[in-house]
Amino acid sequence: MSLPPGLLDSQTQYVETSSGGDQEWLTITSKKLYTNAFIVLPSSPRKILLGYKKRGFGAHLYNGFGGKVEAGETPAQAAARELKEECGIEASLNHCGTLLFTIQGGPEWAFQIEIYRADAYTGALIETEEMRPEWFSVTDTQSFEISPTTDAVFPPIPYNSMWPDDIYWLPLLLANRPFIGRADFDTDTSGTYRMLRWWFGVLSA
Image (cartoon, rainbow, N blue to C red):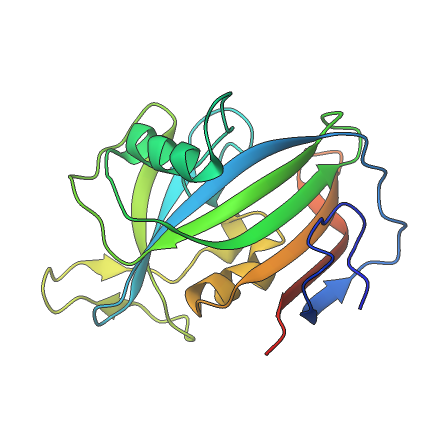
């Protein structure tokens, strides 16, 4: 299977998990490296840490914790730095996916996002000027679950308040299935992001 243009891992076999849209892929002339990191705790009930973006690009959406890879950094180093800067914690992060996305009429470059997850962390969560960390239940239902240790109530993952493509690849991250994908966006008159075309796949068995 041929991958969407711009995805570099052409020597590895992937199996498509989802795709859609009938528009031609947007042209990519350059890329910039970014990271996105998630904490997924395996205890019962399972929960995932997301951040509510308070300002800047992607404001008012929930996402993982990350940002641009600076000169001299590896993506893994940048992911660890951004996690600490945005919510005050440290974690042993494992790479689990690569996401390429472009925005029609947006930045001239494509965003190549290296995605990481960890099953534990150290430190105390803090809210920063950019992000407000919040826990969400990892469940197939839309009901609330109560932690037996903290009595905290965690809502389900808020896909309606996330980037539109997250619902296609976040379940792969939660299942620890290495994935790759691309999504092309534009914005409507209200500034809401909508997908024009997308493709996601996992490593072939």
